[in-house]
Image (tube, rainbow, N blue to C red):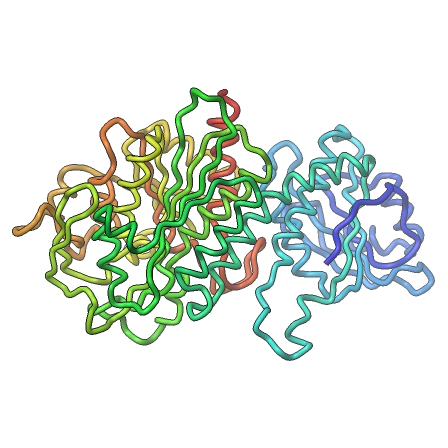
Length: 497
């Protein structure tokens, strides 16, 4: 679908969508369209009690004599309170309701808002449409399934076409990172193995990232036995991928983004129930988000020193698979009793946390993992679980989440939870009791974070995948986390240097 910007003149034909902020009145533009359509706009506003509230929407069939095919009115909410992400959601929601059109022109009817803000608003609407228009359809063979939507062209009317296009392209760089993550998560596991995932990351070196791929022999030499133990039941060998970006000043410490990349999780010997196991292709969601984020940071030349690292494995049952009760020695020397082979993501994270701290000495670490079902029980699909050893880092992440509508909820960690993962035969076990499962998983990860490092763990199990269409994504992978972390980097690292 083509998204463009065009001159702020009244269209004479086609389909038109007009947006209003709450309690706005018709301007010269809307009055002209109203007159041309025999006053159906004003009649519809009165009949439907349309006042421009967010999510208000009216679809009208215009009189043939007007030259218009369809006219839509949509609400944006109060102009003094609306967030950027709210406007994007309006754009995405609008797209989902107007797909029967071949092409559409969009205009926000307001003469009070300064021109520079209207440029941003038009670009945000375009950004929301761009995200919502994404559809993973590459494996369909029928033409009607391959067609993403009937809508082929959207043109947003703007008083400054060049400025709107530039602002939209700025958003598009981030959104392309989201789509990169979505594509990875949506891929079936027979296509996206650890090796093919690593190849896609290697290709990001063309964006300016320094990419390093660790093979099995390299991991063995470094003693990454926790990660290797997870992978030993699979015919597909594991990989670790490191993406390095140096856009900040020389004295700026690295921020590390760490992602769990279990490309398929059968549960191993502690095998999962068969129903729903097909969903376990997206157990690499954390690695996908880290990869999409690093792509976006490089493409927009972010003024930050960042490193992304992902551990890519499959967790499969096999004659060589790790057994419940095995003890492994992690790369940092701590021993782990593996009581449940389906608690494998934390084992992967343990070794890549060691690697990134040893080789990059980051000041901050943010890890992302589809780690526990327990976090879904606690928060459902509406919030990501946040665990951290630093209050300021937590507050900054929560603020970024509120601004991007990728929300987080902080859950506790502490010594009373930490002791629940003590083992009678090793330094720790990889699973705690049934209660507080998301917390004990976070406590496990915390044991591999060095003293003095500010760390946050994002359990994204509930927000990585959606079974329904949302305002900004179709059913499937959401790409949750890319926009959140880009916003965090902009506001708390780039703007402070």
